[in-house]
Image 1 (cartoon, rainbow, N blue to C red):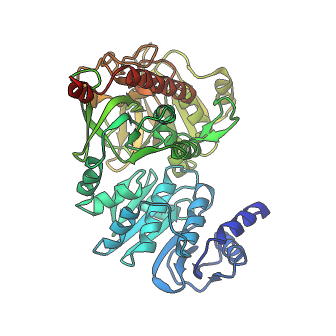
Image 2 (tube, rainbow, N blue to C red):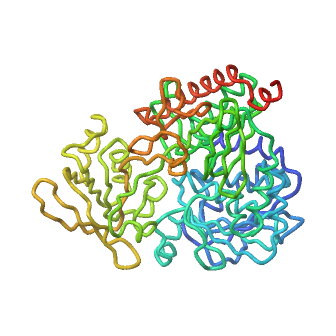
Image 3 (cartoon, rainbow, N blue to C red):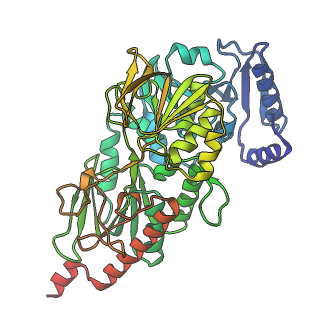
Length: 529
């Protein structure tokens, strides 16, 4: 299961183990169980503090628990093989069980330990899901820190019957005490906010206590990270308030058009950006969603940004890089069947539709790439494009047309998502040329029709927005309000690309620098007078 390189890496990681850990597997005669036995045997052979046994009695087979030998009340269970994107989660579980401290805010750890009540989590993931590891790792940490929290992390492909029985059509899918808890990506702080009624108040108090920033960046995607690096390097007190650091990168798999980098993946690039911001004195505030802007009344004054938890952050200069989100179809049935067959992440949810008939809506690069990837997994793909022709790059179109299980429909307007009350059963597509309607029987719909800027919270503030809701910026990234700049996919700059966002972020950072050196703080001017 583990090649020589992976074994060498694990040996290096295991140097951080402080206490003995036990792996206890529940197996049957299946091939997956044999693979699990091989994996655990290899892991145990790498360090004297790791032992493996195969006499577990859990109903899910194959599965195994990881626990500290000195405290059997704290454990986490993996059902199926945690490879692919989840191999890192497995490594962290081993290290944390062995006493290696997690790189997590100490306040969050204390919140986990202080939780009262019994929590039995079950979480389903797929090996190709890049959103799942955050949830897996958060639940793992909680289970290993609090004996009243259990976490069973289930690879859906191994337990397909259970996936079907629970009608799981999107991952990550998390259940608590047998009931649906949340569908989608969650970080530790988000989970705690759902369990701990005082979590938001504690977070707000922490933010309110912060001194005003010279530059506050709202948004932590490529544009926001680039802005912060540039202003921090100029010596300005800089903060990043981000609902989700990394932004759309966290939903992006293969990246092949970033100059100087032949191939990377979104979450990896996001980690690199976080590491880079960590090289400077940048205050990164995660899970901080802005809801209101009060611009400064004069040049050099303080802008105020109110967050969802009620906290207020102040800054002399703002850089708005709130990014964008997937555009919805806006047709009957879409909202009703979201996560019940309507999906937006082909890499995460594609494996759940193995052998089934699905549709991809959107003929741009994202849609065609999704159709190509899904065609390798599902039974049949129908690609539906509103325009009279596909808009994707020629190389992608040629690849798509070469696949035998793909049908392409152009001039097609999706008018309704159909379902049986619990899951998707089909689509109604109207031919925009003839007006004829066609019913397509299928079990999944992947929507890939572009982006909507995250700027609704800026309406009515005096900040100029385009007819599409984008922040209007000039060649320096400046908005119509002094001291406020914009960068990335939320702005009027065309070509929503990672490399463009990084460049625009740098430009906005330089613009903020120029503004700050030309405008003294308003309170200092008043005192001097």
